[in-house]
Length: 517
Image (tube, rainbow, N blue to C red; front, top):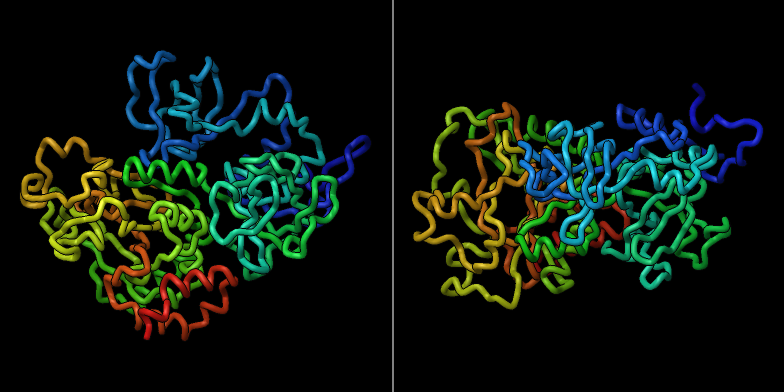
């Protein structure tokens, strides 16, 4: 069968501008499945396909044996990101069969819960309504499969590094990406704004320039829906389309406020993860070869200088928008330079109880004992949030971090009345949740939230790697001396590989003059 970009014939609509230039390769099993789906007819016999977009902080959504919410709950959750085929639809309840992903092979799930989508349709009704034809197929084939599968995408201006927004329906560029920067890619190749319904056409899809490869799904120029140019010189340049989060930033913000933590997906893209892992392996051989292979963890420091992928990840526009909103201020900084934490597979530690150190239940900087006068933590200000990026998936079998939901609302560290030898009393232990997250996701949590690293639970046989960041208002004294690593970064070639916006964010968060004099 001919590639999608070459198909057509008598009576076919003329190719769209995106179709005339370049067709991105759709690689791998997921890409082949997407290409096959686009080539199938959208007849009445086609069953809708849904993607699980909710339950990110819980490791997935609940599955029950029957339609009734009182029916038995099946073992395990349907993992976020899984794709399922609709078998039966009854109001808010969906009976499904798994197409890809993990969890119960079939069962009943809810489409929405507490006003939030748990699943989003990916094929079926919405494509029938769009009357998907050859031109639309070709336009869709011009974009990366990860971009096509994302619920929202980000549109980044490559001149400034800022993100396309449509507050009140008017186009603008913003340095941080809240709900106003959430777009959906439609089957016809248009960008549809999630809040206002504003439409922009992503035209002239082209291979990403070398500096963008591995960072975006497509490089495009934007056009008005009719095909004409957009008003304003700032909107006339090259834009990059990036897969965005599964939920709106405001939904993540609400979850962070209520539970004390939230999981933001796609902070690192798959190609960025592969690149970062290769660089980390090189650095480990060169600078950390003395570290053992089992039990406990170690930190890889002075990493900003090694690759621009790390800088782009810690400057992520959605994560930083959430943090700025949560802490109620624009002037934030990292309390230490980004640290790569390697949790080694357990051998001697398997089955052992944690001690009172980092492996015991604790709160994070600046909510460390003795850091705040008489440990009187203010209630009217948030002084710290952790912004940790999963290079590897966080799973139960590789020591995913445990949390006590909503414990940040206690506004105090777990004391002797709660702890015994670093272990929670039985009455609290049942509340603990081991937070699972996919690779590339960021776990944002209030530094007051009770949590613990779980070295004894990494029974996977492999390292589990994450990037650690402690974010605070700029007036909070750093946890570690930032000066040497800031100088190392500034003397490397990494700043020149960043766009203007990312370079400014890293300069402010990591290299501010007040801490580098």
